Image 1 (cartoon, one colour):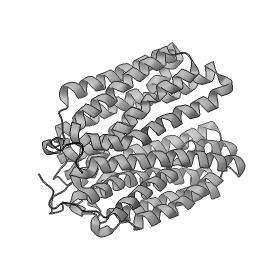
Image 2 (tube, helix red, strand yellow; image 1 turned 180 degrees about the vertical axis):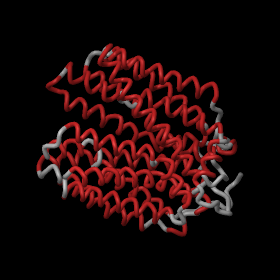
Image 3 (spheres, rainbow, N blue to C red; image 1 turned 120 degrees about the vertical axis):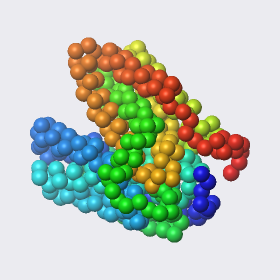
Image 4 (cartoon, rainbow, N blue to C red; image 1 turned 90 degrees about the vertical axis):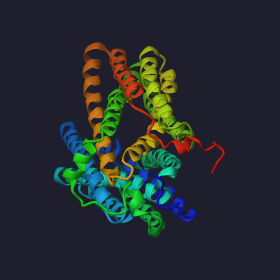
Length: 414
């Protein structure tokens, strides 16, 4: 169904969204591995660190669907994004100021819950600004900004932690929320169409989670897609930790540098290719790009299992950037395709996000068991087999979801 009217967002709003996603990535980077480093420096036991991180992960998993439903029910995506960002900033300050167990646990839970809302809100703002036809290219720009923000923030926060203090990472995280909020304020509210933002219809539905879940459960293609994505992350999530362990055993002197390269190189690939992915999705369709991303995953797993040179492992790990660039853009685009005119876009994002969380959680547990009992190469090959299952399911059962009129547009158009 065509858009109600052609969206015409201003260049100022689009650039503000670029900067907003960039600074959000900066803010979220502070809650990565820096938490474990900070708590270890404060004499925390590994048991307590693991408990805090596990509870935060469970909250993030459980909050995906309610977070998406909350964004669907919100009258202003911009306002709910601002509230989420403020809560994340407060959790960073709490970590820096009072590193005791109850406060750190509460801060980690608050961060996880707010992130479940912030992520869908960014995509909803994007959809509300550019509409369904422009969403793939817009998300390509988002993913590029997020990737650049992650890389720069990781380097900057690592330097702060080394030269200043471990808690300075979280002060920097809180401070970075200020330019993020300024950028968000520069996105013009009037240009965010609330109907488009929810892939909805002019008459807004009530904020009824049970009713929304029933509607989503009846969307078989959406559930099939969520299963494909869960299988992808079942295969993918544990590959980098396994490779990191293998590199440490084979080249302990260079381990830190090589592991950092395994993280940074794919991010560079994502930053370089994600805008092109967004443009290509309009002309090729979504399915060919998804098949490429899914096919690269088992290939990467097999190569990682066979290659023995640590430096070559880093080069193979660059293939992760191809999959990440495609999925970062295409997954929310497919969800938008499958929920068009339902008003349940963000709830459906939560359902797919839950699949991601389940697959990733099982991946690390299964891979850890296999690596301990049979070795890293066997674990990598087993993960690759899960990736092949996801590829076959996508190939045999998942149709193209993009509107045919997009693929009739010549690549030089627009």
